[in-house]
Image (cartoon, rainbow, N blue to C red; front, side):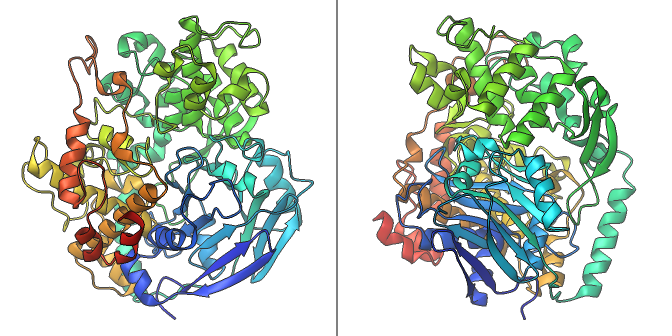
Length: 625
């Protein structure tokens, strides 16, 4: 048996009601690092091109990382992958918790689902007993109700489920794991809903083989001891406050978008910001929790008596910004309420916040009125109105129906020039980080195969940690000299970060390892898997994955090179006040420089034939040329 992986995946066909195991050769793991790299390869080869993302031929994959299931620190992630119904491009979404580890315990390196059930179903995989069961009594329930019902029947299972939003095929719906962990982006809740699949409930008892367990234990102990002894820095802050530790600094620095991306910290001054900072949120903390194999434990269970909520998840940075400064809302209790509503419904908080911000600006500019919004006074900072309209989105009623697929779709329905207030890329609401602060994020938002995402290899986001500034995150990973200045070295840095980030995803590592202490990556891979890799080996595998993601999106007919970001997002025209005043981001030049380094045609983003062949992707050439 190979180390760290099982050498097989599980195919589930809901149309046929069948399960099929497929064994895979070691070579494919070595080429794609297992995990989500493996998902890209398998979905590309098995899903017909230009498949309807909500049709029976669409495939959705659940892939734990190569290192997931081992005790290697911060490797408990799972990636969902497939075609995004929201953007029409390659889609992926990263999630923590314990679901990824449980897939490995079930004896698989990935689960791929296709077809459409005739009636609502849920899938169980329990100690090698696999069933497709009726979900009629679950259909219509929220996430919490669904999990509670399933656990009544199947003890100690790990669950991935959709809420009512996914059932209704909302393109901004998501998949929730273990009640509180969201695979939020790409609209995969709608994919599950289109298949009439309510949930997966899994439990396994298989163990992974580890190449050198003694070495792994020693490396892990050293890393975790340093983490637990930290009295300052990112690890300390994330443990004490969760991601809300970013709320204060992101707003005052210009990182957080304000007033639907058109405002500055002057619009959300200190007296407002201080109401939603981490210290205020922490007053409601009951206990910490975290993902499998994580020494940081940045999650937390909260109790909010003012909202009659006995147990909920700490609102992460994205919730705080999307329902806070983006809407000029400084009501802390509403952030708990809105986060809880979206989690229970299975909605992506970034997309919901961006949709409401779009609607508020349309209302302000008299494109819509109270007659359109069911009598709701959609004004900036109007907490009651924000909560009411989010409930309408969840229930798919009234004006909520128009917002339920995001601002791009809503603008197409409303018209009247409303599209200028829709802050998205290819339909995906832009994440809560401003490219005028993290400059290269504009290139990522516009041109990555999963557009609009902040967790998609922006150089400036990648290096924002002090460790990366000193080339200390992974000591073997050295960015070129001069990478902070415009020009050749910077484009090379973008390429390296894009490649490296794909590997981090495929290994199952947490994105926040970038911000923590030096990570012994190559040593851990050798201890867990037994592979003696160099950093150049790692980067080559990452380039292979990135090129295949790009090819998938192009094969689907989406030419990302034609993408345009809203002017206010990139400073066109530049802001006259605030921390980002005078900044205009030339993201189109960044894309051309990046393409040249990647071996892509800078005019259309197509990987060149020689690039594909050099990465053993010759099978792609016929699809693109």
